[in-house]
Length: 367
View 1 (tube, helix red, strand yellow):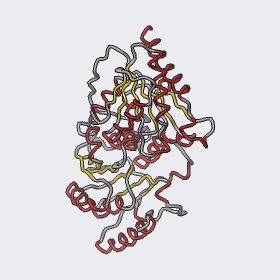
View 2 (cartoon, one colour):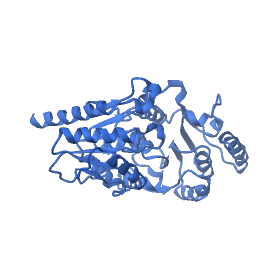
View 3 (cartoon, helix red, strand yellow):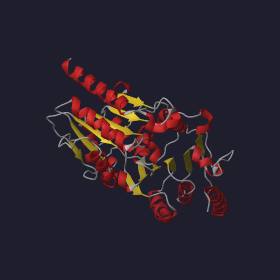
View 4 (tube, rainbow, N blue to C red):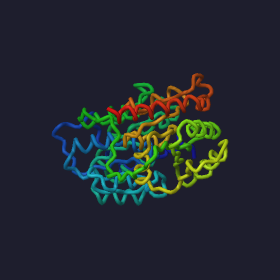
């Protein structure tokens, strides 16, 4: 079944669901006197999406400090929220229809009054919130949700939604900030929020991290360019160590990069698959800089204030996902000719950007 067909089927089902007496309440904006006691927040897609959502999560908690916050996430993102003072309960759901009724049962038990959908798959997220009896359902509707239609098919099933098309291609954090204005909370922070306590390991030599993987091939800088970059950095710095991080499935990618070097070196380590999410954040926090594409670890680095060299395919990608905080420590690179994609960025450009970060940190230490 196509995505459009799924949305239309969900709309029909929810129109029939009204026979049970359920009606989602329409709202332009919550009033200052409107107190909610139980709130669900759904952010159950990729790591990077979740990091983008943390300012909005903080804003919702600030608006209703006494409300119970129920967070619906992917299990792999648990480490980022399990000790957070913002979250009272955590539920797991992958966004698929198979686990939807289990989520509905759990949300009913929590007596959720409002559901904020930040990143999740339509239509199952809206159906789940409706079946759970949520009085208010608010969704940040993205371009993909429209499926080429003039209007969002499930608009009538929402209390309110933020139409990203009205503002063009703006940064995801700014989109979330405008979205939470429905809460009548205007000071939503733009910073990524990271609530974990980091235990950064001591290193006697500077470490540059590399994360070469990404969710799609067009976001990946070529293996051979990473190999060239490492060769250049090692030749310039006798005490520098390179660590290639990543998920277990990226270990082979890192090994290809190492094998593509001119000369093997003990100062280059493939540590993919050796850390959980918290350990990865701790490791990244100890890097002098991280070379990374448009992917989750970039946003972890931004959250823990590690300098980065971020590789983007074009200006649209930069506008939507580049770091917006601590801009002085983040080098954002894109190709001169956007038709070349990320492979249009040379290894020399990236090496020079890494050098700028290293020099800036050395200068800061001397002050």
